[in-house]
Length: 264
Image (cartoon, rainbow, N blue to C red):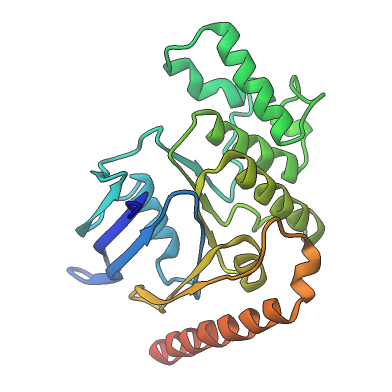
C-alpha cells in the first residue's frame, strides 16, 4: 500500500478575535490524506479557512492543535520541500525572469552551469522563451504567474501549494493558465494542492475535490473526479462534468447559506 504524500491530522486553528479575550475558531479538527502525484483542489465558501489550511501546510502559519506530515515527517515551518504560489505574483521586481526563477537555487549545492540548465528547462516548461531578461513590470499578469510557478518548481519541491493563483486573471488568461498547469502536472508528476473558490476550475484541474464547510472549516465532502487525462477545455461541456458541477454547486450553496444565517 502506498503511503500518503501529505497527511493533515486533526488540525485546528484558533485566531484571536476583535474583542478582548475573544477567539475565532477558523479550522476545526480537519483531516485529509493526499497520495503521491495527486492533483487536489480545495473548494469552499469565503472565510471557510481553506487558505489558512494551505498556509499551515506551507509552514507559514502555526496550527493551534493537530499535525501535518509530509512523507511521514512532521512539518515545522517553511521549507524548500513545499513550493508555494500565491494569488499575488510575489516576484522580486528588481530581478529578471531568469533571476527570479534561479533565486532559490542559490542556496543549493549546484554549479552555475547546473543552475542555468534548471532555469532554462523551467522557462521552456512555462513557455517564456525570449523573456529571460525581462523584469516583472514588463510582463502580463499571466506571464508573471508563470514565472512564480516556474520559481516554485525549480526548487524541486515534494508538493506544490497554490492559493487561488489565477484569481486575479481575466477569464481567457485563466483558462490558458489552467491548461498550462495541467500540462506541467502531467510532465512533472508533482503532488499539487490547489485552493480555489471556482467550481468549474476545481473540477477541471483535480483528481479529487475537497469541499470545506463554512467557518469553522472542516472537510464536508471528498469527491473523486473520474474524468480522463489529459483534459482539454471541451470537457467542461461533457455531461459528467456538468453533473459534478451541479453536485458541488449545491454543496457550496448549503455552506454559504449557513454562513449567511450565522451572520444574521
